[in-house]
Amino acid sequence: MQHARFPVYFIPHGGGPWPFMEFPKDAAGRGPWDELRDFLSGLDAEIGRRPKAVLVVSGHWETEPVPTLSTAPKPPMLFDYYNFPPHTYELSYPASSSPELAARARQLLSDAGIASAEDPARGFDHGVFIPFMLIYPDADVPITMISLKNTLDVESHVAIGKALEPLRDEDVLIIGSGMSYHNMRKFRTAEPEHVAEAVRFDDWLTQAVSTKDPSEREARLAGWQDNPDARACHVPDHDHLVPLFVAAGAAGSDAGRQILRATVLGKPYSAYRFG
Image (cartoon, rainbow, N blue to C red; front, side, top):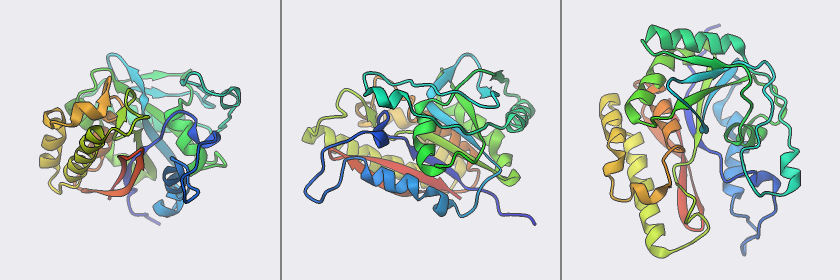
């Protein structure tokens, strides 16, 4: 039976090992990441069926000069966060990867004239294992990773996504894992002027992602730095936004729609679904 093609997602992965830490509650008894926890825990049901495998592009893996596919059959844990409680360095997510998916992705990239490489040792960084411990808590879906190029430019990452689009018809789920807001210098503040910047940028980004014409959507995303609030929301760099560019490329003719808008200290961050 031929299934409909899978959608493509851009999801926020939050800050560090947040699901495994205690945070102060507000007057309603909610913590700062509860909206994200609920969203990620419900994503399996939102998708509607299990993929054969997942291809994840995380804002925490950059390579030079070409995109790289992970090929370790059982990726180790990569604890790429710092100064957190000791128990957060003992987490385990024993999902397998799919070397077959890595090979297929490399072939598609090659067919599109995009060189690639593979890494047999790359482990799950927290942009992967943190959200997927909530999405697929039993670690029963194979996960293969693809890196960002360290150029972090829009055009080549949209092109990577376009090359990988056929995977959606091959029972593969493509997910970009990052943050639409990622200013680590002001992450824990609630300065009114900065909150206003973050709100305006999130509104603009959602409008860009929702653009129906793929060429126009790509052009709008390519000019993201022209938005007067953009750089205030991505400091010191925009690595957490780049997975969205890959997702937008893999979306093809499917317009995006916002499926989550949550806040941390007043600053919004979003998740998007294409298709």
